[in-house]
Image 1: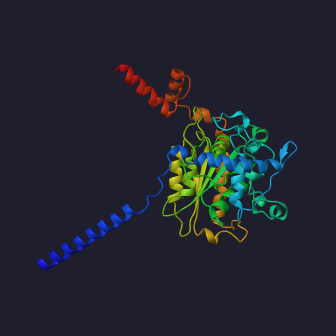
Image 2: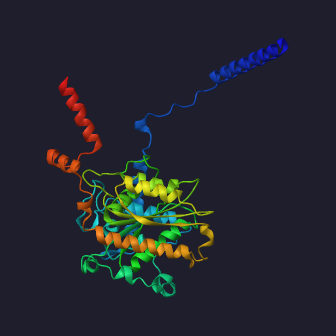
Image 3: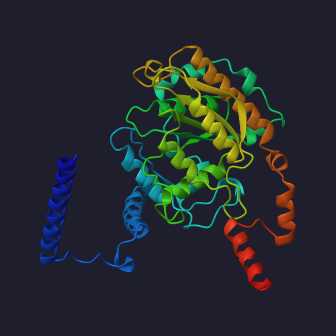
Amino acid sequence: MLAARRSLLSVAVSRARQYRLQASCSSSSPQAPARPPPAQRPCASAAWASSASSLTTTTATRSSGSGITTHRVPLGTGGHRRSRAMATTANGAAAANGAPTPAGPPSSPLLDAIDGPDDSLWRPHALDGDDRDDDWVQRLDLDGATAFDPDGDAKEANPPRYLVLYGSLRERSYSRLLAFEFARLLERMGGRVRVFDPRGLPVQGSVDPLADAKVQELRRLCIWAQGYVWVSPEQHGAITAVFKNQIDWVPLSLGSVRPTQGRTLAVAQVCGGSQSFNAVNTLRLLGRWMRCLVIPNQSSIPKAWTEFDAPGRLLDSDYRARVVDVAEELHKFTLLTRGRAEFLVDRYSERKEKAEKGRLLSQAEKEAEKRKAAAAAT
């Protein structure tokens, strides 16, 4: 026992001598240059603005006449460059149809085109030529959804608007492939669909949201849409960080604007193994938290790598039939609620706040009022 204690003491003494030797060596060596103060370090938003100006210039050279000539790039190699260029030119556009928008950078033609005829940047799912002729979506009997019009011809003049989000950046992303199928189905039913590309979206909190074009693009699309489709892979029993990051960038309120309140929502997931519902359950929780009207139906595709063919189209199966069911249900709920969303989500507490303050206050403004009242009381 005594020998063991002596051995431990010897090791401790040896290590202490080693640390003192290292300290003396480091003190005699030249010191590393001091880190510059924050004011001298480059700002992330400034770096983004610098790169944005060059990309915007490049895009402007592709503009002609009154419109913008867009160049579709496959979602493979170069997809990230396409997204950054799109995001850069997307700085701060106004939402379509006079919807209120948060303060931000000035309007841009590309985001103004969200609801315009030149919308190919947000329609990577669109098919042309033979692909469209062979599209299984075009052969479906969807009379139950397409004939439904609770407001009488309103959907012809004002088609429902949908935003589709997916949660993977992989080259062959099954959540993206499933998101594209949802987009095609909703367009087949008469909707206007935009798909957001998450490539280039910064990590939440790492940049100023008002200075980042990609964040502004996502937020304006959320305000533009009347219904959402959220598709995420299940990873470690939950949704992916790529998908959660998109939702984290969309606040519950932007001033007096509620970007997601009253919008309908359909949720779906793809699984690498056996069928699971962890991701869709999490998506439902997020949807309720964002004050969306989450529809009852949902889709979960197990072993997703076996359910898509080589070109990326969903194979005929009961899982595909469920996807059609979910899209139909979302379309019907959107038609039923879009003109009544303000009534459905109207809250006494918010009416009271508007009457007293003239508008809805942000949380920061409420806290400032509390501090001011506390200071006045003392």
